Image (cartoon, rainbow, N blue to C red; front, side):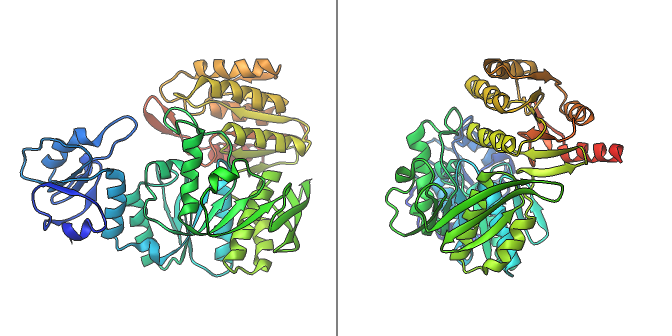
Length: 487
């Protein structure tokens, strides 16, 4: 329970009616979850407007309504008007939970690709060094032995502060999280100051309906992380650095392979044998040593060095880094999910054009007998993205198996027909097996010695989104069945 006046501390508001000395129980932004004496905050989304559900919230017991536009409410409730209800929600949540973020060491990681892998490497490095660390991102929220599934890469502000409080109470000292540009656009991270803001890279993805309107909006949202960080770690080989780091006045430490940097990547070697599948590299500058990272690809060398530099600034013993990188495994990110004497199977979440391009080009560089790529496209997404998907994966794969991803409200056949436009453009060899489990089994049963089978798009996900329902689907479980059959 909290006094409304204290809950509104730091927020510019107008009292339209009622009493700011109300005692409230909790904060809700979903009218269906409102209980007696709650505050209901009306948020505007892409598809719906919370202002349309005020009556429902009041019927469920809301005593206070927070709005961003004048609405005639006849009920005996307190009505608070603010400029932006998302900012108000973030501030109210911070007040309600006692601003736990200020008592944690926060590391925010943003970038078009590499966020998840980098956050998990940082987490492993911190825990190896004796710190209690939580992680928040697209795989969910993890701390101690607790795993919480989330709908968004960066949760809504109320959940975010709630989990910060839970972590703090559980003895967590450090939290490393994916700070998505979408979260900054929607003010989920409003009011939070990060101890270190980390940039993996920036490309031109995530621009389109339901994401960012244009490039300028995209990079300006990324920029917000660094304007709200005490230190910055940056990829000096990334595009659009001037825009992403515009106005940043704090200490910036950078890493790079192709440009000058505080931590320079040198002599990258790709290794593919029965004992190790990954890369070896050395660094110069702030850290001078040689490392192996057990996640394939040069772009994962970048992720590893990014994590290394971040932990260097946190005072981590570099000796601990070597063992972590040598054995690191990130769920659904270039994850080696099955190894047999004949072939290997990798699972990866890549779903942006840049991520897929790096993925297939990197694996091709390991010179497998064949690169067999199993993938589909997401429904209710731009057709142009599907054409490019076919062209990118088809251009580097020896065989493509078109199948189902998350068709949502579209037909799989329609999605795959769009992908075929790109496949045909590069004269790719492909077959179509709509059922994803059948596609995986086909690839394994017909593998040639030395094949690398790549499962693209699902990664850590354990569902398929079909006609508004999420049905259980786990590539790991399918591969476990195949492994038993092989044995």
